[in-house]
Image 1 (cartoon, rainbow, N blue to C red):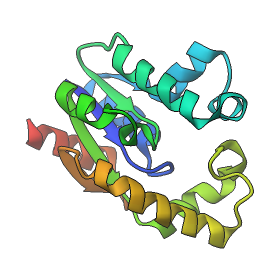
Image 2 (image 1 turned 90 degrees about the vertical axis):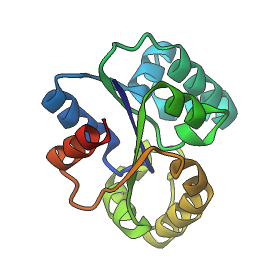
Image 3 (image 1 turned 90 degrees about the horizontal axis):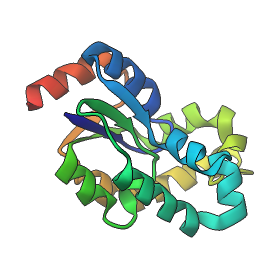
Amino acid sequence: MKIFLIGFMGCGKTTLGKKLAVKMAYNLIDLDHKVEEATGSTIADYFSAHGEEAFRKLESDTLKNWDYPTNCVVATGGGTPCFFDNMDWMNANGLTIYIDMPAIALAKRLEKGVAKRPLLRGLTEAALVNFIEEKLTDRRLFYQKSKLTISGINLTPDVLRAAVLAYR
């Protein structure tokens, strides 16, 4: 089974994905890392050099053309479900799980790494919360197409695993 973890940046897709993959004896695929391997640069550098449109196209192509193992956990980028037909493709090819978190909790997690994230560079704390709230409003329509939605507040790999097993 392919498990696609989706949600806003900072919700824990990669961190929880690693732990879930271990618990289920699945492979972890970090979509951002696959894009970085393909380009030979960081997401931030690629984004800065080529713009969001080129990045989103590359991200979508990587998502849909990766040779996935039969059983894997895929940590997607925060915007992955919101472009092209990526969300529909993920729903057709596996179990999608939206890790839902409020903007203020996401901002607390993201404030230290603002410089590494192209969409967040230069934002003050208040501007960061406003930015996240606006993006969540735009993205929620896509995120809510997930087969499962789970709160990211105090989410553990065991709770996530139980949700996956209950879905089967």
